[in-house]
Length: 284
Ligand SMILES: C[S@@+](CC[C@H](N)C(=O)[O-])C[C@H]1O[C@@H](n2cnc3c(N)ncnc32)[C@H](O)[C@@H]1O
Image 1 (spheres, rainbow, N blue to C red):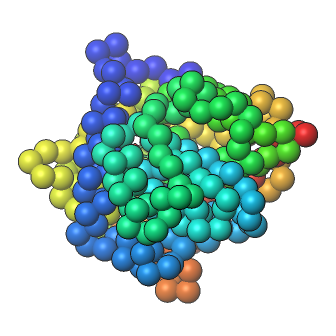
Image 2: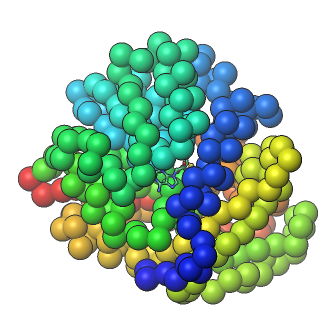
């Protein structure tokens, strides 16, 4: 925690531009990476660990934070009483709203465009039974405590917070491009206090960014940081898990397991913690 960002970089603006572009590309899902058609046909597109930790949603009002174009939000909406998705990308919110209509879920799901740090200004305090956030949502945030504090403030006493994410250890690793078998190498330190500024010619879904690259400012929070911010909010830990199978191909050598749709290292290669998930409860 306590990351420095160069003075001339407005990290929220840089990340907003990047996600606004991706929210449009991903919604058109040219290569069927997000499997939107499958979702419209009734598939639950949440990761298996998200489904497991969220559990029974009947009668619950859920907030999905940093909801992107709403695929996971709407998957949960099929089971919950109502779901609100929040994201700071206007393109994400417009596409999520349209997807809700296409899926026939507009009566149960609504979407709010706001910076997550401002969520307490646009949503009623202590009004949700569950907060849900997962897979690529906190690496863009300098102030992890501000994130946890804002979202926990929206939770009813007795409500739960489900969070799943790429494992901070996995973010330190790298492989040579296209190297399917060699050793992974340590790319960056686990503990850092400097934001990382990266540029890519394509999205993590493999789609090229038209006429541009994607620039993003990232904050490599540690596992200790995630525990610390929830403990400081007086939340009670219900479940903590580390696992190998994650929803995207973080390394080229990873292969999809058709049984759960998650990506794993091939058999025979060392197993590593690629993801983690936690469920916290707000004391009643
Ligand atoms: C990788 S996507 C989340 C994907 C999500 N798990 C899903 O598949 O439905 C990250 C999202 O976080 C949003 N985001 C990043 N920084 C944000 C901020 N400060 N406030 C609100 N949303 C933010 C981006 O706009 C993007 O839609």
